[in-house]
Length: 227
Ligand SMILES: [Zn+2]
Image (cartoon, rainbow, N blue to C red; front, side, top):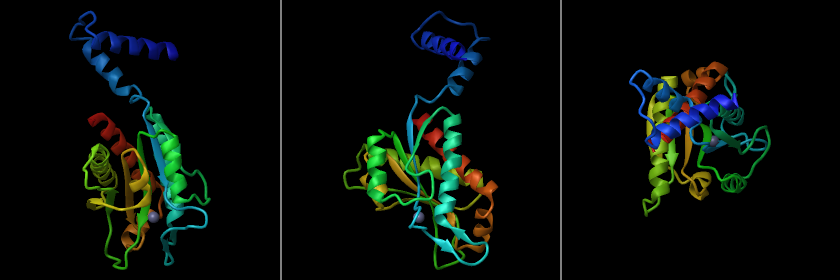
């Protein structure tokens, strides 16, 4: 297997540095190899919101939902998908235990993450509110990290909405610790409202959460392919 990968890489390097010209018939094969190769071994930090003593939002009426469980399941599914696409993934938590917010930030920085994606589910006193929104931290400098975070947010929103058919509620400014204090491009995705009776029914199904996770992974992949 390694031998095959080396051969593919050799073809890509050879072509990109102006090696021997190939016939038109051969070119599609090379393009396919580029598309399927691991996207430059980027490190993705996936942050499953809440956990342990911090349950996050809770829905007490049926279907009963606890945010920390939804975030962990979604994060695990997204990690599996990202790894299958060739990314390196590190997770701020992999089970039901408490992780303080600043520990999550330190973990991401020490792990040299290229991007940070925090996964959450939302609640609202108005039960008709439903849909997906993504937050990034906006400072006055409009620096590189902010611009990249906004682009990442747009990629995530587009892809999660496409995967779930849930309404898009926009890419917004948010002053949350994990997206403010981290050093790499960072977003927080609110993947649905557990207070909406219609959305809660969808969120109670693993298959739907898997679609959310696929949307997150596709969004990350489209971000790295667009920069
Ligand atoms: Zn939350």
